[in-house]
Length: 287
Ligand code: PLP
Image 1 (cartoon, rainbow, N blue to C red):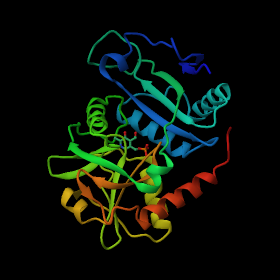
Image 2 (cartoon, rainbow, N blue to C red; image 1 turned 180 degrees about the vertical axis):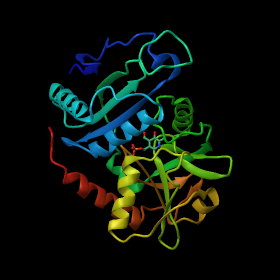
Image 3 (tube, helix red, strand yellow; image 1 turned 135 degrees about the horizontal axis):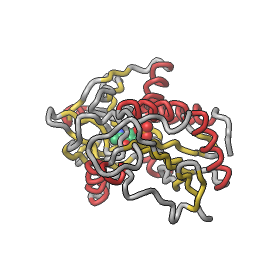
Image 4 (cartoon, rainbow, N blue to C red; image 1 turned 90 degrees about the horizontal axis):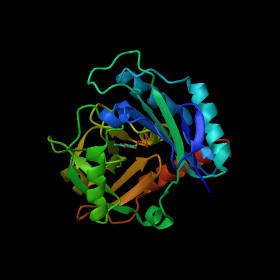
């Protein structure tokens, strides 16, 4: 099947789709991205993803290239052209094309690109047995809350975890706190049953899955605290898990060489996986 991309306002074959060398995304990583999961014909949490996209743009003073409604129409057109039920709708918006200069102006026309990428959802074995993550230094900047296309530290950290045969790397900052993964949010469950995750401040990307996990936990009376945790807390934890657009809620049973709890997927994680799946199944299909 030949994939299609939306570049500015036009649908073109993905292979060969182009933007200018002067695009500020290419020159300065001056742009943001957003990823909406298409899962069994359903767009998962589309509105919160598009709301975060608006927040990221506002933080960088990049105007919206078109209305949210217009983006939603283009997403559906992209899906119609692929006729796939699973994938990741990848949207990237840069400040636009301009002669290279650190300074920017409000006159620049943002460039919108979008495509449907293949999704690699967790396998049933990963979901039933849990995965292993390693830890790595958090080498990122002070505005991790912006979903910026500048992903060098995330990329290098993910590469390190891949080379170590692990699913993800949990990043540890200068204070010794685990902030989040290279492409996912991080959680532990304490011995007293409380779910603990780093607060959504500027040192993490406030994941949309994270937002939903916390909402579901609150709705179902599960105890939670948004507070940084350390590797020592991980050693004492009974459960651990991660969340992201493509992994949903995924259990973690090993961190470095630490076996979490009894090494099996815990009840709290299982409950959140079940609740999230039920919520996703209630979303009307678009495909
Ligand atoms: N943290 C980082 C650094 C990420 O890159 C991502 C996703 O790309 C997440 C967390 C999870 O966010 P979401 O749940 O919106 O996919």
